[in-house]
Image (cartoon, rainbow, N blue to C red; front, side):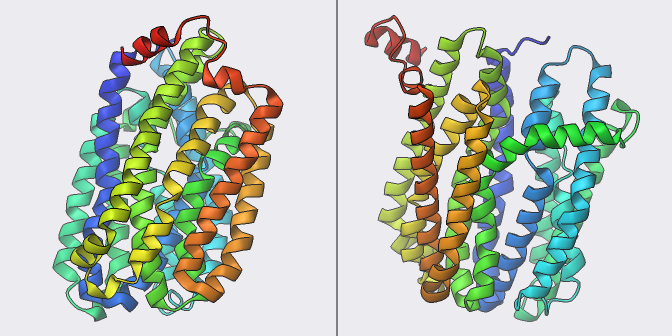
Length: 432
């Protein structure tokens, strides 16, 4: 079994964060351009399409990336990677069929997207295609920098196409096809790089189904928050006018980019914590607490900075017509520290201890509560209602997790109270 080395993890983590920075900050760069060229109505259509496409991506990806990176890390020989790779591809292929059907229905039900030529194919299929990216494979094999280079190249190509062809409101029909071309080129490059490392793409059906089962808990819990915030713009497009979709969409992009910063750490550090639990439980808990401290502090700072500068920043960057997004952003940004708590508790403390049942129940109930509140609140209060529903849904999830942890008797272990060392010693270790 390969030893998970911390120095190597830091190098990989930096490379993956660069990749995520391009992936999630890139749309934020395009938001002002889209808003000024297409207007709030046109940008509302783009947001609804992107929201649906990202939802298709997350549904097909289904937590496979975390499981795949973990499986790859624990291999000794290159030959062991072949069945892992093929199972990952086949599992995504299986989920693509029902997801495409659901996506096509979703497009037909959206007043904003149903009038966009080719939206059925470009938006839905483009989102599904993005789920076949190989970032997890490059990270697991110690080549995160390769993934970064491929993504940067794709982003440069995409931005060049958009700035060249999107010049007026009538060009809105070209936005989705251009994004599709960028995704397709990135995938081709990635698969060409690894073409000699696997014997085929299709795995036995049993292996793919087993992977889906092993990834279900991670999908239900780890992806619930990001999935819901990604689908919120589409749900709002069914209940509110384009201007409300735009107001929520700007806030969604900013908060979604902040939440995504936990993704790279999860790809590399979750397998490490899982590896240590059972071997050195105290160290596993210490690493998890460090991760929580860093992200929670960052989330609190993010809330303070956002609420202090949003009234100045949003109109300056996105245009005066997006001023409606300021109060929405001030509410939605409160999701950040709450989501940090829920994700750290689940990914770093509960999943390594195989408490999947608790996570599944909490994730499902939290998602249902979110949707149940989102529909009436969005119908009557528009973008602000959707933001309030997201906040209440995340709070309900956190409360359920805390109750479950107390019942499982994990409070003292999570807080490190059982460690037979002084507080000063634990603090010194944290600074190491």
